[in-house]
Length: 88
Image (cartoon, rainbow, N blue to C red):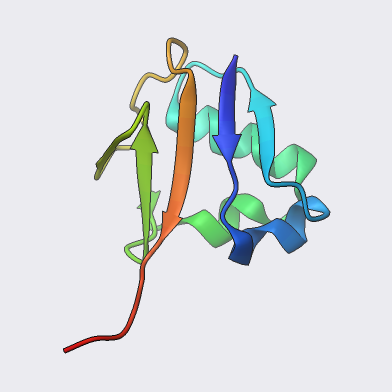
């Protein structure tokens, strides 16, 4: 089971919940499972077959550009990270 940390800007879709436990074989399946519990979530996170560029995913603390086919059945923690704007 993977503990998914939902960022504040997406919590409104999940009734304000900050974390959800999800079991899925791939990142795509995990995001689709989240969409079943938080309707519209998948469309807010995925675009053109990949995680939207303004978001990042950290798997067990390692942030990277993961493909939707990334295996996650062994993952303990997955965090969706919104981009931080500002600065020069």
